[in-house]
Image (spheres, rainbow, N blue to C red):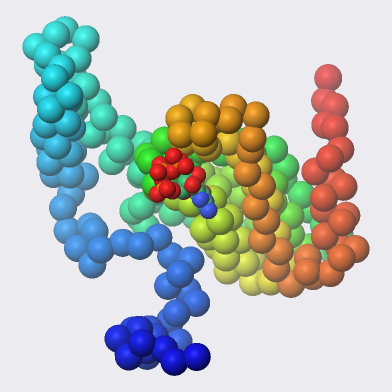
Length: 227
Ligand SMILES: Nc1nc2c(ncn2[C@@H]2O[C@H](COP(=O)(O)OP(=O)(O)OP(=O)(O)O)[C@@H](O)[C@H]2O)c(=O)[nH]1
Ligand SMILES: [Zn+2]
């Protein structure tokens, strides 16, 4: 097949970076030139403009703080994970007790935002790894999920970013993550299908083997009883 020459040039420019580039959140070069406060100022003007265009009276008591509330929420909360400074420090320990089986952290609550419509994605992430000598603090897995979820996302990329980060932290390929989530852009608008949810998975290293993957999926199905 003949590739268009501009496209060919783009592939050449990407060079060896093309794999990681596709799983990275597409950010502009100047993404962190403005401070958080400067971003909030700018975004609140934009939100005000949207609300005025929709015809809303921003002198109304309940609405007048909305532009600032939305701007703060974008920068500090739901998109706070765009800033690499917010990446959680994952404390790792050596696996002195020689635990050699799979460890599963399941039912991790996930709130993210769909980058196509800026509507919520709500669901659960399940993570597993097999230690090669390093173990990570349990809560750090929840924190890694939360960090990458606080960005405009597609579920596939979120899933990959979580696995790549934990592989890096623990120095092993043997990490897996399954996400089951509802996209409000599908549930509450558009096709308005409240029942459907989206499952994605990323299996690294040993989790590519059928039996290991099956064991992980069996653990996810187990009901947790703690009362
Ligand atoms: N693969 C993938 N698609 C997503 C995700 N979140 C939302 N989408 C889809 O992105 C698509 C955007 O399609 P468009 O046709 O441009 O948007 P639209 O006209 O609003 O489409 P409808 O939602 O069908 O009304 C929709 O089909 C969404 O369901 C995601 O995490 N992964
Ligand atoms: Zn969407």
